[in-house]
Length: 276
Image 1 (cartoon, rainbow, N blue to C red):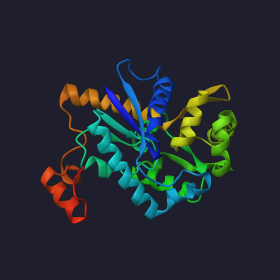
Image 2: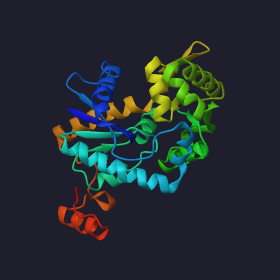
Image 3: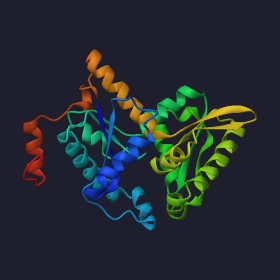
């Protein structure tokens, strides 16, 4: 199967190949031998400068980015993707993409939240130090009905501003991983059974250095990184779809996909000449 991973930032077309190779190599020991990982970015968007990362909490920015994510999902479908994983913990554009794409579309938040709750009773979550990030992830956990499983005051931000730690992680990922591990141990001391790294960027750093568990008082404690969970979730869901005919997502209520005619009508109403 072919799973496309959409990065929520502009990526030059000539970097698609190297990005795909990075994903394939990083997760080769985890995905099935017949699974191909293909990396893609957004067609347009502001340059991902560290000082502009707070944009992600701006509703106007989020709306525009979600639109580009839907376009990237449809482009992946046209390229032959069996499924798409949007590699951002906000799950931007995922619901909208499901309304038009005919292939399964996943974020990394929803699968990793529910997987985390299968590993322990109470969990803690680690997020980047960005304005509003702690409250936003608290809202996501509540929205998925899992706030009762979250340790009190269980969402913690990295103890270094992300505009500094993100560039640092490019050359020294271990430094960020060490900070996250220290905060994870503190959460375990306060009662957490499992730690969720609730950010695609932080999760990638942990994946790069192999930080998937910590030891606290001679006990092994899982540290869940979201992209690997979402990729395995996509494999499982595709297998169940193919073997049992389970529709992804459900077609009832607000999960229905637009017909080609209705999509063209809506596109034209918003000034789009085609539905491509």
